[in-house]
Length: 387
Image (cartoon, rainbow, N blue to C red; front, top):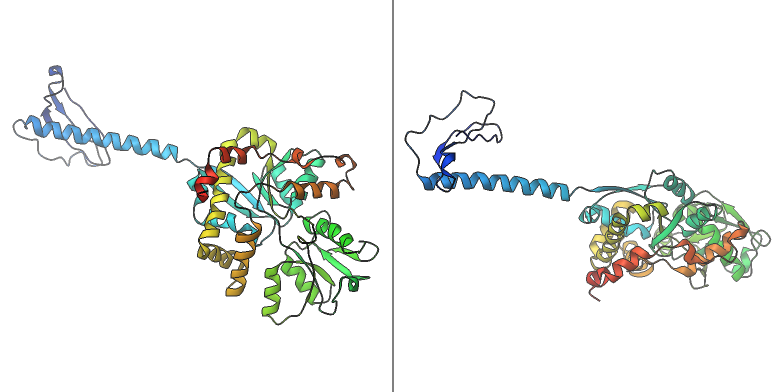
């Protein structure tokens, strides 16, 4: 009986009596057809030993088993494509950048693609249009869209942004802001709502005592350049911004700390569609796992954190890099990425001035922490942090 096997590009013949095969199999001939069928080794003379033929057959069998295993492994490693957008280039994005650069998305079965969309509202539209699967933007963007009927839900968070109210150096007190222009990013954006909440706490009424100007600029360092150029009198910035200004010899006044004033912002919440939560919970959990491990690595491996800040923020100043690591990865970014309900509730109250039907609504209606709770029950966070 002739047994032929095609492997690769050569052709090999062999005649053996395989002792452990049924007698009716008789002589077994193994051959491989290739590009040059005329190139064949001379036929063996005489019968090869049963042991030799058995070894040959076992080697062939092993080859098939290895190839089959590789095929199964390749199928198991098929990655699910997921696109994640982030609405500003700031230190809060470090876990995303670490997850991307260190292959953590792939580790958990995702082909994670990061895209920068410089607006929470635009990010929401991209999510609703199916261009992205997950957005990292202010919680107010997601709540505002949900208030208009969009099927969007917040599933995780990268924490708040540690904003300071920074003014031109000639303005040394809060009362000195009266009659001045304070720059936000966009109407309805996180900085706009933060200022709307902060200023009354400081005794200033927006629209009466001060003018809020929507600059259209989401990056706080660029708004501070407007401040230094005299185009605005104050804006919100971060400790990192202050270090950058100081390193360039620029003067400024810090009038208030937003968080210490009791204004809790949703600087970078993670949102997706409710449909995706139902259809792809495994993939969303994989994303959260990659994100959380990115935070863990950023906290425990400082050089990895500094590397992504150098790469994505183009920062080289050692003091500034240390400040970013301290203020974000060791500060505002939570180890377990649960959203802060109090911050979401603030957004609801702000938005209710525009959307009356939001009055009385609770933050829990705009959150879905089921994936985070599932990971907690499975011991993922405990295993990662060892506690």
